Length: 131
Image 1 (cartoon, rainbow, N blue to C red):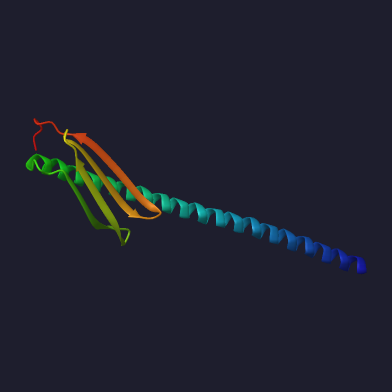
Image 2: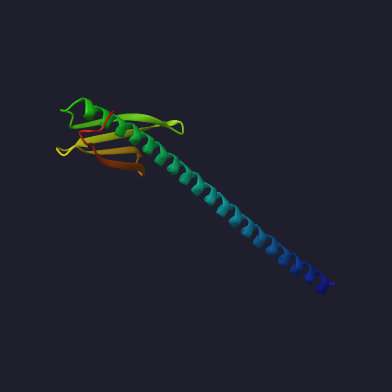
């Protein structure tokens, strides 16, 4: 009778260890999936922020081209605003510089540290360009 009792305890102990091992595997799989989902969410936000920065840059390039054609004294401009991004406002800055050869350098920055995106565009206007 003692031997049966001992075998039952041994079996129960083995089953308990197996259940705990399965729970550890399932927990680690769930944690891995959560981390992957969080990483994907972060990457999606960064991609969206890059697109917003690109759109902001497009507006700044159009402004720089228009102002440089209409005003021969126009050489530089910096402006800062806030853009709505996933329910919060992020600082956005544009810097426009025009050198004597009519090369226009436009830079747009969006975000706060550590998620700052910056894009630049350089082009040259010729006297024959139309608005």
